[in-house]
Each structure stands twice: as structure tokens, then as C-alpha cells.
Image (cartoon, rainbow over all chains, first blue to last red):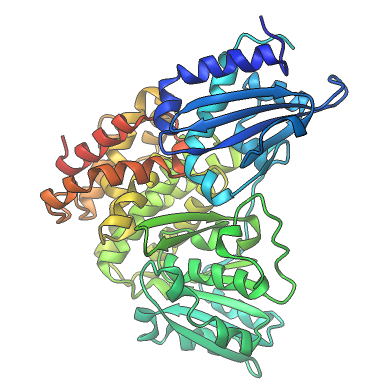
Length: 134
Length: 377
């Protein structure tokens, strides 16, 4: 069982994402990389970054790092503290409501991502399918 | 954690007179072309009282593109209002929200109107919405629909900062609403209540608004259609429509609006009519994912409309008020419709309504719903 915010978890997540036909359908017109930013908090002592190069319903490249500068630039960042990521993966927070209530932040063009809210939801649903250790 | 957001609502007979109680110095009144031919804008101007300067912008068309919405921004800037007053249906109110935003923040673009950007509005002015239709609910929502002329797309803009400060629900302003608009806007309101109730973001506040909205609309809309000038019936539907607006504004629209916005962007049909064309099909589609809540809503239907499931009851009321049952019946050419099917599916799939619908839908599901709504089977 991979531990959250590790390279192993990122690989497992991408594997599940690439076999999710609902995501493939919802993200079929999407082009752009997104980085999940897991911020340190009381239960996790350093920031972590999962870079996902998303293209037409598939993730064609991924990189994990504790140093943001080691990763390629991404068009979007979905940012939140570790505890909120845990709640998100456990489906205790809705990904969009999480943004609207300040539990997560999004950097990038809102007008673009608002057209792909279904894909965003599928990305989070996929994360919930990874058997995760926190 | 979630919110319930609402403007201060002034309602009932003579509520327009509330305007004279506000300290308004310079009001920009924004209304639509049809309403400008009536005495309503002038009644609003008179209700402001003595000594209030006003500028009437009166050529908002139905679902205007941005270029048309902003054509008068220069005049408005020059006039320098301290209040914006929207008088009309959804198009006039949404246009006013956009103009209010652009007047307050000329350094931003409409695409900055998202829930995630702090806009910092109300430095120069405030916003009142006075609906002259009973259905869009825009007077009570933090959303504005923007038609994109080049892309044939409807953008769903939203920010809590474009929620009006006041909504004035004066039944006298809807007494002259023509039959077709009366039934279309009521259909839109029924759609708002049903979608809000089925939304995955539903909450006790939005539920209460949706239930009461349905009670008021379903209990009175047929009487309104038979007796269009009756202020008592009109008042009930008018209040119900705003409550339906509050319901969906606080829990979000769903698949019906995703499909309806897509259809409306490609084919010139009134928004409320498009909502009615999809509502029963989507309720059928969602039923297995929302059985208990839909059954509960169905029990709110008056006996004369309640038949079988919620979708059947909806079909009955829509038929009773003279609404078209299929897209074909609404007059859309079959060949043209099906040649646009791919684009319709793509547009619907990109709507924010996809996220909060009680049942997830694939492109194939959307395609099936478009086909079913066209033929009725």
C-alpha cells in the first residue's frame, strides 16, 4: 500500500488515472500540465509536489519531488495542506467545494479549467481508488 | 462548511416603493428592449423619488453577447452611478451584473468573474435587481450567463460579489408578462427547484427553498396562465421563482442546465423552454441515483399533476401549461439538430452543471439524452 505524497503513490495514481475511462472521456479535449501541491502541516513536515502532464484524457508523464524547482513548469497548480488532501482522498471534501471554501487553492486560468470540472472531479475520484497509507 | 447566500429581498404589493427609502444619488437603470416599450422603466425611475439622477440603458437584447453588453460602458462611466438597477428578465439582470463588475473593476475582464478571485467590488456602487419575469432567479443568484458570440457557447460566470444587494419582487411588474414568457420562465423555475434538490451539493437551506418554491409555483402557475392579470396568483409564482433561484444558487444547477445551455447556444430557443425539454428526460436518467429525494419532490406535486414518478408529474404540469414536450415539437429541424449533435455533446460536457448532477454522465450518456429529448423516446 503506497504512502501518500511519495513517488510510489504518484505512479500508482497515474496508473489508475490512465485506466479510468470516465476521466479519459471527460478530459479528452484537455491539454496542460497540473501539479498537485501538498503543503506541509502538523502531520506532514515538508512540501511535496506531484507533476502530471495531462493530454487528451491521459497522463503522459509524471514526476514527484519535494523541491518544486526540480519539476517542469505546469499551467495549473492545485494546492492544499496535507490534512486536506487526506480528507479529499477519503472523499470527505468535494474538490470544487474545497476550492470555494478555501481548503484548496487553484493557480491557473479559471476560464479554462471551468470547462473541465468533470475531468477534475474524475481526477479526485481516481485518487480515492488508490489504496493509500497516510 | 458551506454557505447560504441571499440578497435582502423586498417583496409583495408596492415593493417598488422601497427604492425611495435608499439613499440613491445617481442610478443607472438597465433594462431590455421589450420592456423599454412599456412604462415599467419610467415607473422605476419615478419610484426613486425626487432629486435622484438616472441614466436608462434600455437596449439589452435576449441573451446578449459581451460586445453588446458593454456597448454602453463609456456612458455609464461618464455618468458615474452609485447604484445599478437591473429591471427585466435574466438577460437584463445578468448584463447589469457584468456592467456593475466592469464599472467597479475596469482593470479586470469578465473572465475574472469566478468564485476564486477576490474582486473587491462595491467601492463605487451597489446593485439592485428588479425582475419583470418569474423564473430566471438571477435576482437572487451569484451567477451570470454570458453568451460567447464567436464560440457559440454560454459561459457560466459566478462570484459571490455579483450577488445583488437587494432583490425587489413587485408583482405589479409581471402582470403584463406575455403568455409564452410566463410559461417559459415558470418552467425554468421548476427546473431550478428540481435540480437544486437533486444536486450533490444540496443542503437544508437549499432544500427548504426548493420545496417551498415548487409548492408556490405548482400551486399557482396554471391559474396564472388562465388569469394572467391576477396579482395574487402572480405574486405566489414570482416569490416561488426567486426561492427556486436561491435554491440553485446555493446548491448548483445540474445536467438539465448543462444540456439546456448547450442547446440554447446553438439554437435560438428561449432558455426556459430548453429547460423544459430536458427536465423530464434527465429526471428519468437520474432516478436510480436520486430515488428517495425525487420521490419526496413528487409528493409535493398537487394531486391533479401527480402521476407515477417525478418525471411523469413534470411532464403533466408542463403539458398543462402548454409547454412543448420534445425538441422536435419545439420546431428544431431534425437534420440541422443531428448535424450539431457532436458540438452539443461537447458543450454540455464542459458545463459546470456536470459536476453536481446526482448521476455521473459520459459523452455517450449526453448523446443519448440529446436524442431522447429530440424524439421523446
